[in-house]
Image 1 (cartoon, rainbow, N blue to C red):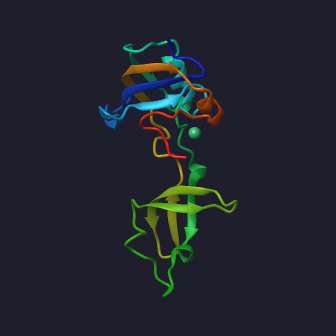
Image 2: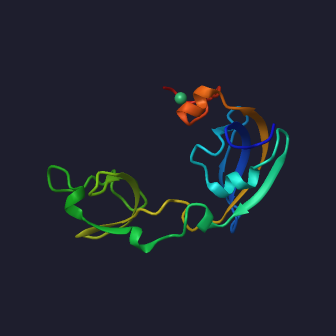
Amino acid sequence: MTVDINMVVSLKYKLTNQQTGETIEETVADKPMEFLYGIERIIPTFEENIHGLKAGDAFDFGIVSSDAYGDRNETQIAHIPVSVFEVEDGKMNEQEVYVGALLPMTDSEGNHLRGKVMDITPEIVVMDFNHPLAGTDLHFVGEILEVRAATEEEINHGHSHGAHGHHH
Ligand SMILES: [Zn+2]
C-alpha cells in the first residue's frame, strides 16, 4: 500500500531548520507520528512529498517557509496596554509576564492565541503572535513505517485511531 487519500500513515521524522541545521522536533522510537492522509491538518507540501511512498521508504526534503508556517508578519506584533496584564493590586505578575514568556491570550473575536512577550515598557507589553516557525525553512528526514487503509470510523471522524491515537 502506498501513501494516498484515506490511508493512515505512520512515520518517523526529524525536523531541522534548513538554514541553521538546528533540530526543531524529532519523533521518538515508540511514538511515531500517525495521521489520516489528506484529511488531518498536516502541511500540504509535506503531504505532497510523501505521496506514493510505502512502508520502509525514506524521505528527505526541504519546505520553504512560505509553504510551511508562512513568513513572519509585522502585523502580528501587538502593543498591548500594561493594564491588560495587571492583577488586583494594579501590578503585573512578573512571574508570568516577562520578556520571552509565552502567554495564552484571547483576541476581540474570542479566538485563543499564544503570544511571546518581546518587550515590556511602563505603558505597553509588546507581543509577537507569529507562529514560532514562521519565516523558517524546514527540512524533514525520515522513514515511512506503516501505511494502512483507514477504517470507516476513522474516515467519518476525520482522524486516525492508532495505538497512540487520541481519546474521545
Ligand atoms: Zn475519532
